[in-house]
Image (cartoon, rainbow, N blue to C red; front, side, top):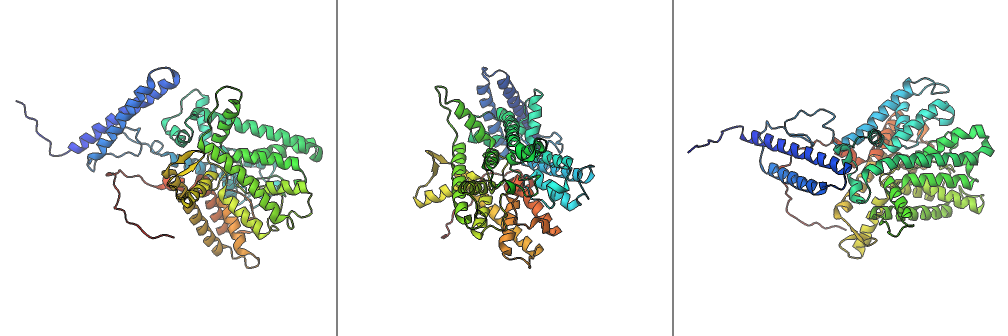
Length: 536
């Protein structure tokens, strides 16, 4: 009889490495089956993939139950076999990739504003102003320290427009488009960035959505540019209207708020057609590409027998957007009839009120001087800036779904209902907790920004200092771009603070926190004992 002796040391390490190798093989098998299912959809691949995923989950659970030795290699990526060398690129998590793409684009944009010739009419920007302008363009904010129309040449404006386009769509969307265009499949790590899309709308293919993002963007921007060109040609001259039409179409759809008119859209106060076109571009760019995709599919199925079921996400986005646009427009007309909208015709007053409601949610164009707007109007603007656009769009802010879910949560608690529901569907508690957490983090970030601005910008010679600072901080954090005239007078500390707020608002504070957290191996799932506290 052969007796096998146990090894006194190294057993945990060997077991962990074998388990890691098995996990890596399973991961590659899953990836292989996914490729087969995309090439030949009619094959028996779904069953294989399900069994492999179950095996992979069971293997991970057994690995967590065994304590590896200290010398065992711990990876942050499940798709890399245990013990294999992990490069810097392979070790990046999806949040780190997302934040890193914006940081890289901001750095390249800043260097370009400093190094490229022919961008300026007069003296070039300093390093702080170049970083501020590049961040404002990449984060599609619209805050400026110099007049875009007079300080930049057409080449400089085109460079800013390129940064706006790249920042609006996101570097990762462009990278995914290039990979798909070359006939290659998206990596598993890139597809994890669209994981929320699959959860919110399982009927939408993430690969198709990636392609439609760019298709919709280029098509709508081209249509908007042609429409604005036809509207502005008789007034500005056909040759002079072409470049402003292209610039404003891209800037409006990306919710950037940059304008190559010195007074933004003030010169079109009495041009309802122009305001309507710009509002449509802003709304389409701000509702999110997922909602746009589902809306197109729903409208296309109206001709057929089957009816496409729009996801709860898209229905909530459309309802919330409609309520905010109409409700905000009514309130602006009420608040500003005797102030900034005084002296206008009824049709112009209504159009400008709606425009103020639309542009406040991260667009940044203005048809009135917000220094002349009433306190009620400016505070309403701050509230709309905090709400922002919708998830998966070029807009910033808390997002319409976050605002709607918090409102639905309060309504369900007032009616003593245990679940938060909308349109015959209950929203998971985890999603509600994320919405509340995002609101708390956003309010705390704005509060910290207010304290810093109070120290860096005394504003002793201005009335309403608190409202002016709050307006500027909220506009930067929610990537809106509206200002009460403070941006160009900011100190260096204030400009650096707003630069950081614009980046935080674009990538999201929770995403940035997830990118900075160093993941550690879990030693088990547990919770502490419950104990109640008194609230309210």
